[in-house]
Length: 171
Image 1 (cartoon, rainbow, N blue to C red):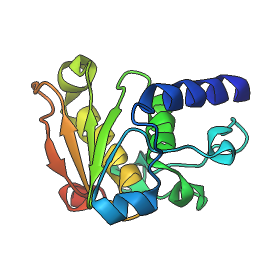
Image 2 (cartoon, rainbow, N blue to C red):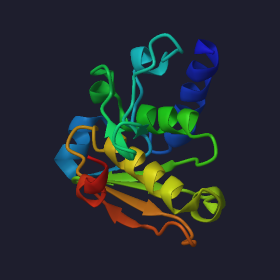
Image 3 (cartoon, rainbow, N blue to C red):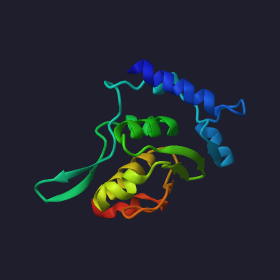
């Protein structure tokens, strides 16, 4: 598994390096815009099953009969790069795959090219919970406050700009 993730990171890195320069998060803050050439460190790329960070999740609470956001049980999520966060979200949500387009100032732009599962098949609650988990995890990235989702609108979810404030009822 570790080798597959490392191979994926190397391939992603090779594909995204079209300009010959790697942008770090410091570079993002300097120019305000970053594309998917977000560089991966060897340490971050070797996220195996045993050292994968916990993520924000939406869980059903029996005692209150409601769904609530549950914080990660460790601080690893705060040290991930944007590319690693997308990879981990995609590993955890196999039916909805994100692609990072860019980061601009305090917003990460993501695309869901195959959005039918999210917009038509998960139901309104499932789609809402996925969007909440994705937003809370992506806004753990340094300086990110908003997530701009791009996908084909459906019955249960709409593209747009989201923040943690949009999911207050799960807090």
